[in-house]
Amino acid sequence: MNVDRLQELGLMKPKSPGKPRNELGQDDFLKLMTTQMTHQNPLKPMENTEFLTQMAQFGTVSGIQSLQKSFADFAKAIGSDQALQAANLVGRQVLVKGNETRLPPGGEIRGALKLDAPATGVRIKIVNPQGITVRTLELGPQDKGRAPFSWDGIKDDGEFAEPGRYRIQAEGVVDGENQALTTLVPATVESISTAKGGYGLKVDLEGLGSVDFKDIEQIL
Image (cartoon, rainbow, N blue to C red; front, side, top):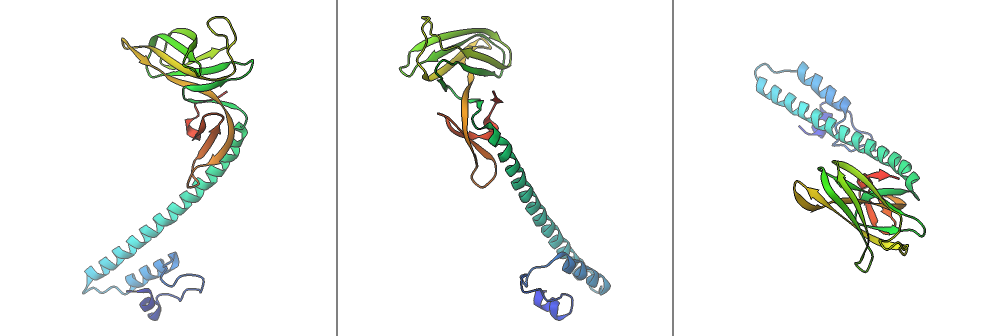
């Protein structure tokens, strides 16, 4: 039974000009339900049951759509709040997964290793843009978890390294095998932006590009 027929029988009021004629609201649903129950045909119980089932299904779909809209509005509100909080990170340093970072003039590099299992003989190599290892840091055995490290900018020969970009290479013995280890490098937050679609945040890092906000491992 279509909406026009329901209106002819007086079971539905005509919709206002601003609302589509083929849209059923909650009041319409309740009125149709009670009218059907009042005019039950005992000779055709199956038709009544099917009608009520269809109405219940309509109510379920309508409720799910309303719930989805509520969740979408809630997600947008949360995203806006996160963006405001994340804006405080601009200009600060964070740790993210990567193997390249920048040595500032007169400064140091502070990073960390992310170990999925205990490791022994942990070693970090600092490699310059020419592919030459300028410093080797021996960290020894490390437990599972995060193992911090720092480089003061002094090379193995005792001279100060030139400021600029360097590659961090880490390795260690895990379960009897020498393996490359995951490195977390520092980077400065330049800006915050909203991800495509309006959900989630992107963090623009100096020299590293854009990463998801959730990929930040630590705020320094």
